[in-house]
Amino acid sequence: MPDRSGASSGVPVEAPPFPVEPEAMAVLETLWSAGHGAYLVGGGVRDALLGLPVTDWDIATDARPERLLTIFPGSSYQNRFGTVLARGLEITTFRRDHRYADHRRPDAVTFSSDIFEDLARRDLTINAIAWGRRGPEASARLVDPADGQGDLAARLVRAVGDPNRRFDEDALRLLRAVRIAARFDFSLEPMTKAAMIAHAADVAWVSEERVGGEIRRMLAAETPSRAIRLLSDTHILDTVLPELAALPEPVLAGCLDAVDTVAATAPGRERPALAALCCEIRPDAARQVLERLRVGAREVEATVKLVAAARHPYADTWSDADVRRFMSMVPDELRGDLLLLRAARAAAATDPEAVAREEQLRRRVAAEQAAESPLVLADLAIDGRDLQQALGLPEGPIIGTILDRLLADVIAEPALNDRATLLVRASLLLDQPMGQDHARGGAMPPPIR
Ligand code: ATP
Ligand code: MG
Image 1 (spheres, rainbow, N blue to C red):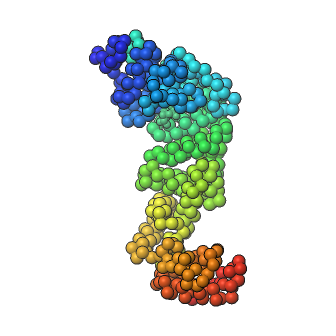
Image 2 (cartoon, rainbow, N blue to C red; image 1 turned 90 degrees about the horizontal axis):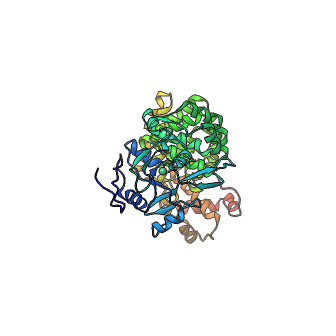
């Protein structure tokens, strides 16, 4: 066996059964030669055994956090549980978790010197495989007490130990199990699935941030419907997305079809995937869902706009002005997502004419785009400053209202988008008695024609 270690102990190190980033090997070798046991663990080992590329290696060791800080100059604590960040890698001291008072995180951690204890506290058998050495004198090997490799081969997601206890301890594990099963298209092992159903409602203990994070990762997968179906099968959906859980089955099926189409056409793009997920629920409910998933206020606004425009029914009786009004429902940068979303919904619908209708709308939108039709305030031939200077108007809300009105007219009739024409129309608007009203806060006059 070749000596790849370069470690002072001189004990030959068996090569790992999968490719490992040199930085991670160097950290392991440093720990071994400092007299410690150290292993690669968790998702990295799982992914590597599946033949997938690994970007995040996690390392577990019997060295205590304070000791890690001295072994790795320049390293620092990563969190309050003593995880240390050294040379870009997370190193965690072996631990046993205990006392889960709130179905979420343990109240305390106890460090351990035993890799078996550390693997026993992990969530899924496929996440509880380690590769490394018990100490400087031992040889490197895979440690797999829960037969995670057997479950990888059988394509099963199984809790480590008693599934009921494990999900009762930490309800986040419910979402992790779903996300990981969906990602690899693994099945839920029957006892694990039964425990998940029994504990489904406990997911209410998980913070909105964590739930949102998990759901968004589910949506970023190749086939997001798999995760949503598993959430539905285990009744976790009733708690995390009750609005979706309440949809009649054919509507949910269409929604998930559209989500998958969007994910396949725009891989990894969160906004259209989220919009597709929200397209079959009422817009006010969609807003609540997005807020709960903690996507951020600006993103909520953009996605809600997208959903509203995606649900807007198109008919071939629309005039070109109708097409332009439709286009102005969302800013330019959302238009691609909007058309993608509409095509995905049409493809998911059972109505065979829906796809052709959407295709027609797409062509008409493209024609308006090619004609550079004015659609937003920035496209207007005048701006607020022009209004102030030409009409002697003071600053204030009246400017915005007049611009909005002019834009509506220009969207209906693009030929009006000319500086002189718009200034004349603006002064006409002001001259109308209701226009005066408006300057004092009244309603705008009816359209001028
Ligand atoms: P991913 O590919 O999403 O990173 P991962 O399995 O690596 O998946 P991490 O959140 O990086 O997930 O966690 C690393 C490891 O820590 C997991 O593989 C698992 O062994 C353990 N772990 C993480 N969260 C929990 C939890 N809530 N309960 C028990 N073990 C957990
Ligand atoms: Mg990971």
